[in-house]
Length: 314
Ligand SMILES: Nc1nc2c(ncn2[C@@H]2O[C@H](COP(=O)(O)OP(=O)(O)OP(=O)(O)O)[C@@H](O)[C@H]2O)c(=O)[nH]1
Ligand SMILES: [Mg+2]
Image (cartoon, rainbow, N blue to C red):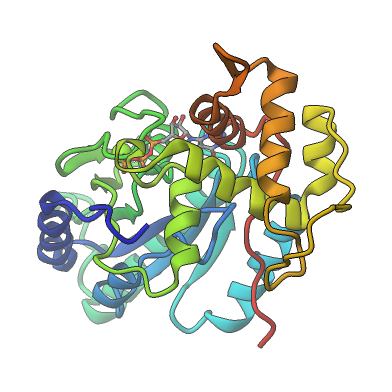
């Protein structure tokens, strides 16, 4: 992960775009990936949106481990409520959880109207003949890391295909204002990362979930890293999906920090490649295609419902 450029110039521009549009909006919805709720929260976004009413969305809940999502919701509700108004898990592709989000937004809008009427007692109580008071609709900005499902969520909220989505990072290129049926206005923004991952696991998690362009990484290496992580918490799921036995037994004597033998993961990758017939001429394992296959099956949820991190006990 050290030598790749995952922070191209347009992300710096998006950061400026978010900062400059922030004063126009009432609410910020941060869309993170429920499979990596911590790694997919951009510290820069938390910093620049501090002070705004914020809603945290754990998107792609259909791909995440249900128990883990429950733990994350609980974690954020307990520990971050002073900064985040609401935490909600969603499936933006199918719409599950979206009505709950809409009613939260309506609640914010109602509170905003009530506060305005309190500050301006004359407003809203004009006589029947007076022109109706035109109030500015609630404005919402959607932010998050690339590929977390921001545009998909917007399409769900508007109820039509208002903005382009895609199974790769960097689909949304510029800002786009859209209007909901209830009049609220939404600003879609391109996904952004941050210049340096302090913890290398964060970079890997983002790469596994498709937030970093695949072109800048080696699929064989990344696929092997994913296998390593899945072997720790989802070995049964892996064994079932690929019809391989994961015994943990080994004839090697060298062990790493987690007491696994070095090479166990590589041998598992080879067994999976053979099962899938991912073999090159000369009976050599096609590590590249095996890596790509593992990554795409994970991203599409075909290995199973998987969450790659759990909240730290506080
Ligand atoms: N399974 C599942 N897939 C989803 C969900 N939400 C979005 N997706 C898929 O994730 C991919 C990325 O979605 P987008 O809405 O384009 O993501 P984005 O955050 O706008 O991406 P950028 O504009 O590149 O930053 C698409 O293939 C979507 O179909 C979800 O809740 N569940
Ligand atoms: Mg988008």
